[in-house]
Image 1 (tube, helix red, strand yellow):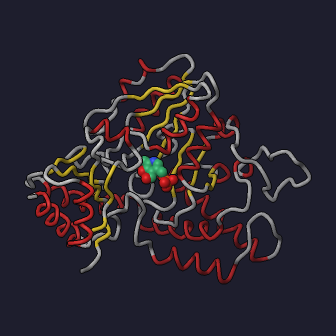
Image 2 (spheres, rainbow, N blue to C red; image 1 turned 180 degrees about the vertical axis):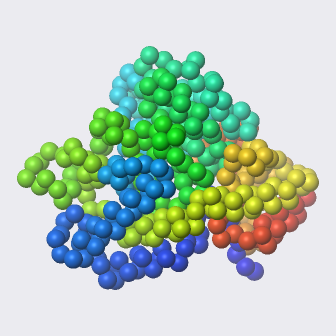
Image 3 (tube, rainbow, N blue to C red; image 1 turned 90 degrees about the vertical axis):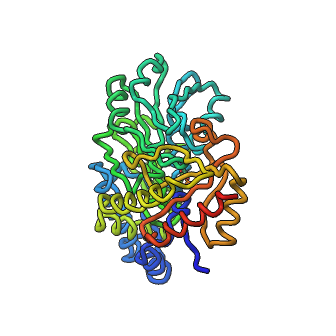
Length: 383
Ligand SMILES: Cc1ncc(COP(=O)(O)O)c(C=O)c1O
C-alpha cells in the first residue's frame, strides 16, 4: 500500500530536492556560523543568509532585507510580536479563528493586564472587516489575524483589514502560516506592521526556522524578547538597536537558513500564482468529489474563492479519530484529526469539541491521490 501524504497543513512533504541538498552542502562543506568570522566559508554563509532575506522580501513585497528577521519558527515570531509589543493596560483585537500560537501568549499576557477581544467570524470562518471599527477602543494598539485558517482553509480579506488599521493607526500583524508560499501576501498592500510565517509549511523549507518581516516604525518600537550575542558591536553589553541584530541574538539555525533559502528560490522560480493555481485545482477536485458524499460535514466553505487547500471534515457516522486511524491503516492516507491547536476556530465553525479530520494536499499531491482520498472518505462515511 502506498502512502498518501495529505498533512501539508501541518508541514509540507516532500520538499523540493534542492532543500535537502543545500542543507547537506552546508553541513558537509561550509559549517561556519554567520556574523562571527572573516574567513571565506563564514562570508559564504553570510551571503546565503542575505540572499534568503532578499528572497523573502521579493516574495512578500517588502523593500528592506534588514527588516526580515529570521526566527526559530512561526510560534516564536508571533510571541516576539505579542510579548514585545503589548503592555499592561493595552487592548488587542484578534479574529475568532486564531491558532493557539496567538491565543496562548495572549492568555499569558492577560494575566499581566493586557485585554483582548475576538472579532467574530461566521460559520465559514470569515471575518467581516466592517465589524472592526466598533470594536476598537482607545487603548487598542494591535490587531492580529490568521490570514488563512489551519482548520477550514478560509482566507481573510487582509487588504480590507489593513486599510481599517491604517485609518485607526493600529499596527496590523498577519499570521501567514497557511498562506505564505501558496497564496499572495503583500506586505505593503496589506499595510502590515508585522508578517510572521514558518519556513516548513507553504515555503517548503525545513522546520525550526521562520521569518518575521517588520515595518520600520514597528521594528523601532518593538522590544526584543531575547537579547544576547549578535557578533556585532561586541564592545558593548547593550543590545544593538539596529536591524536585524536587534532581534537576532545567538547563533542562528544556519542549516535551516540554507534549506529555506533553497526553498524560497524554488517558490520564486515556480511562482506563487502557479503554486496557488495547482492547489486550487486539487482543492476543486477534492471538494467536487465530496459534494455527494453522505455522512460528512465540511467545516467551512464549499467555495473555491478565498481559500487555501485545507479541507476539514466532520464524520457524522464514525468518530473522527477513528476515521483518521482507519484512513492510515486501511488506505495509507495520512491526515490530522482533532482540534489542530485552534479550539477557537472549531468553536467558530461549529466543530468543537469533536474536531475534524483535516486533509491538506500540497504541491506534490497528485490527482490520483485526491481521488483515492475521496473514495476512502465515502467508504468510511457509510459507517
Ligand atoms: C494558522 C497557524 N498559526 C500558527 C501556527 C504555528 O506554526 P508553527 O507550529 O510552525 O510554529 C500554525 C501551525 O500549524 C498555524 O496553522
